[in-house]
Amino acid sequence: SWCTNYMFHHHLLHCCSQILFELSTIQSSTSADWFAEKAIDGNRGLQQLYTGCSSTLNETNPWWRLDLRDVYRVSEVVITNRKDCCAEQINGTEIRIGNSLENNGTNNPMTETDMTGRYVIIHIPGDWKILTLCEVEVYGYLAENLAVAGTAIQSSTSADWFAEKAIDRGLQQLYTGCSSTISETNPWWRLDLHHIYRVSKVVITNRKDCCAERINGTEIRIGNSLENNGTNNSICAVIPAIPAGESYSYSCDGMEGRYVNLIIPGDMKTLTLCEVKVYGEGIHQ
Image 1 (cartoon, one colour):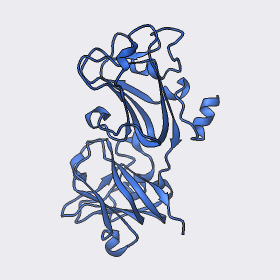
Image 2 (cartoon, one colour):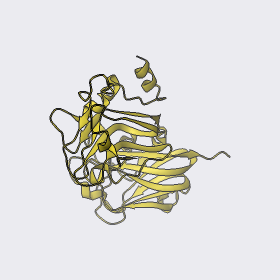
Image 3 (cartoon, rainbow, N blue to C red):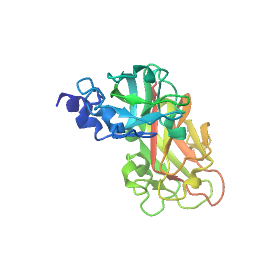
Image 4 (cartoon, rainbow, N blue to C red):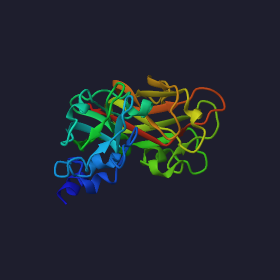
């Protein structure tokens, strides 16, 4: 179909039923059969009054969330309100986009022009609120993940948890799509982007099955040096913690470099990465 064709070419993310049923929606609560997925069923609800809409219960800070399954550069979000009554209930609704699931995603930033993120969150702050959505349409482009064209290496390898598994988009495979070092001193993983980029952010996905705390204290370093296996490059961020199976985004504010290094300083450390995504722009030389 027209919509599927555009989705395939990553030119347009359009909330039509045959695509977004493959994605996932969730909301803070559900009123009767007004399920979260009805907001992306391709029916704006105008012909059927409210029957094609999602709705929460009357509650504090109700929210609705769409998982796009990948990071998109979102240019526009179109919301259709209910037609039968209560149009004012949507007043004050916030649209947030980002990669965090903290506080059910409501800590992500408010929408601006061309925001990037995996999650689209619609949220009404306050008490005694009902969030009803008759259609949510999201337009944008698949953000370019620079990591997939890179080459990965790590300080050691545990069994078949090879370095390149951290850039294979293996989110559905629990830990089988992850990289891992053995337990050692100062384990590291390094991505060669093959060209120098201004890195805007790095997104890290932690393992889901166990041992989520092992990633605590990991340093993200970016630069052009291979001295000390690249671990002397400048620090973009230090990871305090990432909950099991979740993806956290770290802003690098345009740091320049060919190499992205992750290292855990200390003894008896194991570095496991289930996905590393890198976003930025090339430097024209």
